[in-house]
Image (cartoon, rainbow, N blue to C red; front, side):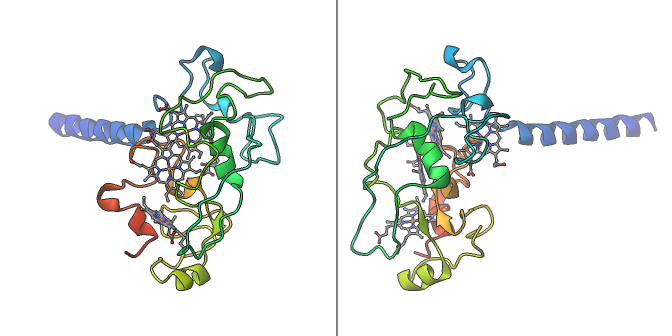
Length: 200
Ligand code: HEC
Ligand code: HEC
Ligand code: HEC
Ligand code: HEC
């Protein structure tokens, strides 16, 4: 009887910690957690979001200064899609990753700390990056011939979002979750991420 209770308590504790550690695999401690930098005000979210007086046009209660750059787009003779200048969530990402806006330019302040000059700095030349900010529809899948037909305007397949039919940085990356490495939506082991959309 007593033993049964202890086992039940132990099982409950294991379940509790399992559930807890799943939700703990969030942004804290990731490369998007700037709370250890003096300029962050020791907070995590406020570098990118604010509960009040946000940039309404940018959406997502955005608090970071936006890039004003004009980008060189991906182009190729076999591309069926028509990428445009970065929009939506991609523009939010590029507001640090293009290297033109300081990391600490948020909440109306103009910062001085830019993203390090390494492979995480994509720059304003996106011609050597996977295309973004284009419509991925059933028609595109047909035209290309080796793409998964998207389930809806908001989803390719489970876990891979579209943004009003658009492929954006957020289709492949979850800005808040380092679980799969490189903030990827799913692990790319065996190129599993690529194969969510490409039937190669
Ligand atoms: C480095 C910038 C950055 C930081 C830091 C950040 N976010 Fe976000 N957040 C984003 C971006 C970019 C989006 C839009 C992502 C998308 O739509 O794919 C977003 C979207 C959201 C959304 C709406 C969409 C969703 O995923 O539910 C919520 C809620 C949110 N963030 C909460 C938070 C909270 C809470 C924190 C702090 C614990 C935080 N964010 C920290 C960049 C950030
Ligand atoms: C507030 C600035 C900021 C915003 C906004 C931001 N990032 Fe980052 N991101 C960084 C910094 C700084 C790093 C670390 C770069 C380094 O390692 O030198 C980083 C790292 C990354 C990495 C590499 C992670 C790794 O484990 O190596 C990825 C992938 C990434 N960001 C994607 C995104 C995407 C996608 C978005 C938008 C949804 C985004 N970021 C928005 C600042 C930002
Ligand atoms: C089609 C999927 C896809 C899209 C769209 C995409 N990425 Fe990535 N990204 C990846 C993958 C996969 C990796 C990991 C590459 C690796 O591990 O070598 C990555 C890596 C990165 C890194 C880390 C690079 C490094 O070497 O440190 C950054 C930063 C990044 N992405 C930012 C972005 C931003 C910003 C956008 C939008 C402008 C974007 N990504 C759009 C798939 C994508
Ligand atoms: C969210 C869905 C999605 C994911 C994930 C994705 N792609 Fe794509 N990719 C596309 C779409 C849609 C196109 C545009 C195809 C076209 O226009 O014919 C494209 C274009 C490309 C192109 C350019 C094709 C051309 O004709 O120039 C290459 C190469 C490519 N993707 C490789 C990859 C690789 C490698 C990965 C994994 C790291 C990946 N993609 C992940 C959707 C995706």
